[in-house]
Image (cartoon, rainbow, N blue to C red):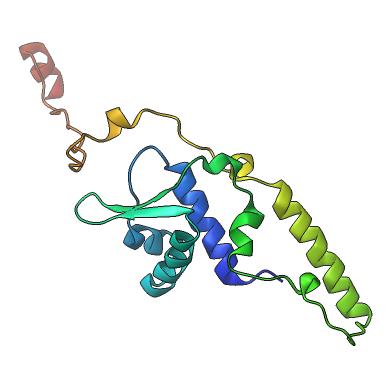
Amino acid sequence: MIPRKIIHAIEICAILASNRNIHYIRSKELASKLGLSMTSIEQIFHTLKQHHFVYSKLGPGGGYMVCGDFTKVSLWDIATIFLTPRSEVVFSDWNPNKTEQYELELEKVIVDAMKKMTFRDFVEISHEDSIHKTSRFNLKPLPKTTLPRAPNSVFQLHMTF
């Protein structure tokens, strides 16, 4: 049916689309989230970069981010760069049996559904300002401050004993 590489590419694009204006995502983070090897992640990114779906930034604070408005990109747009469907391949003397016809019809249904579904349909895309999340120097975010758990008056000190 749908090759795993396409499923992984769609999952990667969904993660990138959901974090669009926040920060770059490193391939190491994606590999740990999806349970994939770095090699397969980099192969998928290479193809996505060739087709201008993602771009990368090297160095500290670098990683991958989607190009443009990903809410208008359909799942089929991502799938077509990794696959040529069997239904579009023309065989002059091929006569499919019932099972093969069923598979072809099922594939047509899947393709139609993927053409209609965009990332807006199933990914919550953040519209927060990136100003609050990162600085212009691309430094790591500050850790959350912890408040001390100590009594702040004599009365509270007496209540703890």
